[in-house]
Length: 459
Ligand code: NAI
Image 1: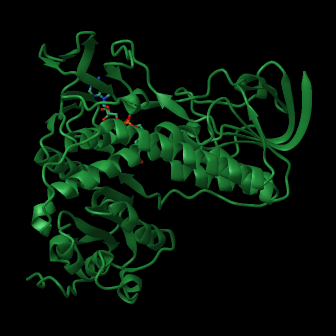
Image 2 (image 1 turned 90 degrees about the vertical axis):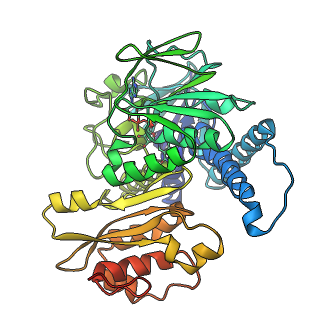
Image 3 (image 1 turned 90 degrees about the horizontal axis):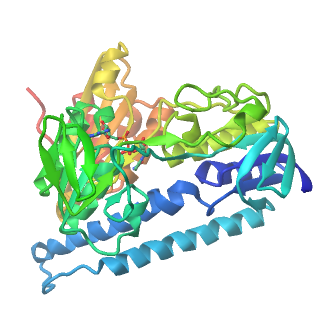
């Protein structure tokens, strides 16, 4: 067995792990980064990037269907899904190469193989390599939950990974679970012509995002021809692709997507040998410095179960690497942006109105519809709104929600505002470029202040 010594060993090269590796290397440390699969983790290989590549096709197709309204004659449109899949694969490959280049440029040593702690100071990679380390960061991520009642054969009964391998658009698709993953794939395939049914056990889809967002998304998806069965539990799936619903009803489809959540990957990595504690759900518990119960061993990303979002993982990676290399940093979670990449996009950060009231604020909202914005009219992107939740007493911005074109890009401004405890006056005093959809925030702030300009004042 060959033996090597590193200052920092990182297990998992997803967005948390590789960012932590770069940060630690830039602090002058000798860093080992170990992964058993491709660089980039779930996000790059079977998550954010491939889905957003496919969804960008859907967005373009949606626009092309509106071509006549813009005065453009296209002739009959058709979709080559095989080409869409090929483009998705090549985007993933290109970005993977980019990460490899960055890691090499930062002199991070890469190991390929299954990593397992054998003591609080040693990791074995496969059978041949022993890595001794001073500090370690665990970034092993999550995977789709595997439920025996939904036996994924990855041909007809799919999970969020195998659905990415389809080369043809299914005629009908049953989506089990109306969370982020279910809604994004429903939106994608419905746009491309599939008859989609979402079956959700709870009374609402994307229930965690609160009633308003859930209702807006529900209505938008239904408007696009998606059938949504809420309060409907799928009990099992027969191989002939019949879904057995609670109460005795059934639903048939050509393909089914099982998107009922993800579970953390904390088994079989020797956490017991390192002495790292996990909770009942298998999640590694950490403090605000991202340190586990074992001093010098940190955990970041999905495996902590705090927020299964790539951008949270990479931020946690920076915090963990800073602390592991002699610096001092803490995680804060009051301004975590989240985006649902459906058509329309939905993005939010901070508190909803209900949450702000519950927290004891005298809260109110300013909501500005894109219908009333010049740029939205100019580009025919009038669906949705920008909304700011404020503390009426101080004007502090507590939360923001945005529905519509480029919501994913727009939410950044509000993340900065909330992270830095800015008030509506800060937004109003900032000159927003015209004509742009960023003016939606300016108008929402004016509305929240009770001084609207491009909407009539409320009586
Ligand atoms: P989820 O936990 O968000 O949603 C799963 C849904 O399935 C729940 O609403 C649940 O009530 C429902 N469900 C469970 N069992 C059911 C059954 N038997 N019948 C009917 N409904 C059932 O999980 P999801 O969508 O798989 O996403 C996992 C994680 O991935 C999320 O936490 C999210 O943070 C992350 N993600 C983030 C994305 C983004 O940032 N745009 C995109 C995709 C995933």
